[in-house]
Image (cartoon, rainbow, N blue to C red):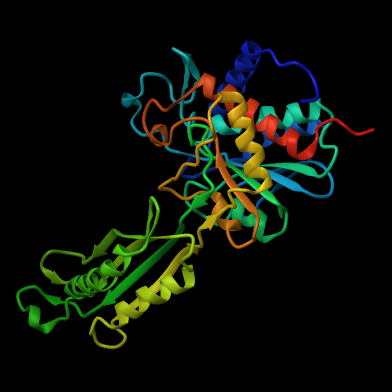
Length: 393
């Protein structure tokens, strides 16, 4: 690899310092305000020589795009800057907004999901610049908002407006430095049932919307459940979960309205439009009077599966093997990442980063310092293989 020799103890200290600074900049949802943390990363990368742009279409939800080089291939490293709320402070052994180094780990809100990956990306971006940048192609780093709410104003906004159109997308995620190249699609559907209110003492005078919803849910379970049971691809399953139900105003009133929300996870070979149509067909066939039940698509994106022999997968896999001495492991995740917004673009999408997903969204969240160092070294080697850092004549 071209460039300077890296002292690993110094690298560990640098990554811990960057992570500590990021943890100290609150970006919790709600409200998910990323303006302060976006200004921090933008300023650092502008000083490093990157062309930076801060873009947003919702107040407080700033996204940073920092680019070095020109042409193709275009590699984009993406990480979300927002975190969940810290929850009860009594559950934390340390201040959640202070990155505390303890027994080989850094503890703090977002340490695993996903400010640890963010610290690695920030160091990686600066190290690429220190080595002279890409000799061919370009590299961009995107630090985005609105991921924890699965909203449209982060990575989706950048993709839809053409601010990034990568050939390769590496999404920071707490994968324990394993590659995730397959991800299921996600579909959220709201089902609304309507009825007619009446006094509970004379329920026949009304039309109970909750009971209607119960019949619809049973039809959905009986109709869709057996179909999904047969849809599997290796370790991945096509699933449905009823995650929310609300209805009624008071115990002594026949409810006039009820809503339920369903989460569908789709295999990479399934189509999100077809999945929504399938749910709608079953709901409309439940036998309820016309106009009393409707479905609404809240969000939906297809899944993806990157080629196992793709150039980026091969480069990252070789870097993992070179660093660890073991064959790179392809992992699966039960969640959904910002990679889903690029699922239909025919590009390589890889989830990769330090930390364990089980650590995220929990009190005393932490990430191993050694994993931060490994992630930094592995991704630097992969970028060098793909873009030939600092080799311009």
